[in-house]
Image 1: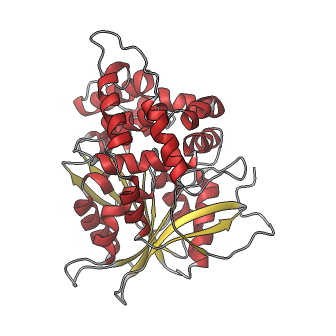
Image 2: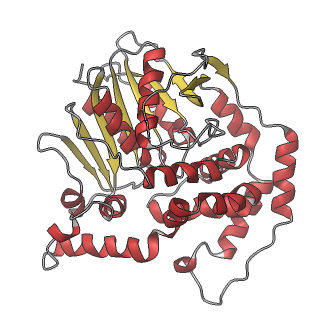
Length: 385
């Protein structure tokens, strides 16, 4: 499959964009939530069998009657947003310029199951730091193809590699000749490939991880488990987490990697399923309280755009791709949240890489602890030119 930018008759225009969900879609969502059919619960069951019904009922009722989508829509629209077309695909992105003349361009890529809403409490910290001696950044934050307003998908094959090439074209169109890249989860893979394909223009690659994510990713790395020693306590813990992911934690991924269309019908037709699909991961992958309005903003973006199905198709395409990128020669930075010693064993970091560890936060540090993430981004990218 050709993952490069194809020759098309698409426009390269960049158009301003504002979110404006029709009231009829809000009314439909509220009606579906009010009339939901609830799965029976097994007595005594907890999170080990999936999202508990009492928890989900309370969250769904708040989504229906307490959550203010219009307020969140207004908050998102406070950031300059744009739409363009790259490789035949509609791409939505935030482009927030700093007032600082010395600001450096920084490309932020979210992961799964997330959206650009993940960065709303991070952006101001980066574009306008309180301390004028700290580096500032111009932020470009695209919605991954198949996510949010980068929908609908134009074609099959939107892998990490194809997305990375689209991001390179996006930065070229915006006139950013030198820029840094940052991401977590899927975004870390995309960021690494941007640094590989566009090393001439990329100043550095910064990614986030945590012990569970590192273990989950390690299950897909051939031969890594064989290099761990079960008699070593740190290695044993890593192997235990890898085995737990294979046995109990990877079901959501297996379904999307194999039958994205089938699960997609439920995700775009039932707000309860879409809510559960994302809320479960926020519960499992975080250790700090998440603002439920921010959680429901991302769930709402998935719901209103039908991204549950299209995001699943991109996971399918990546799973069936043989292109996972190659090491990039540009500087690398790693920020480990909820850190423990297993991450050093599981993440193939370069010996001279920037490495930071934080006790708190996990999979969504831009939401869980944005001040810590902003500090690490400034520390890594500040000296790079």
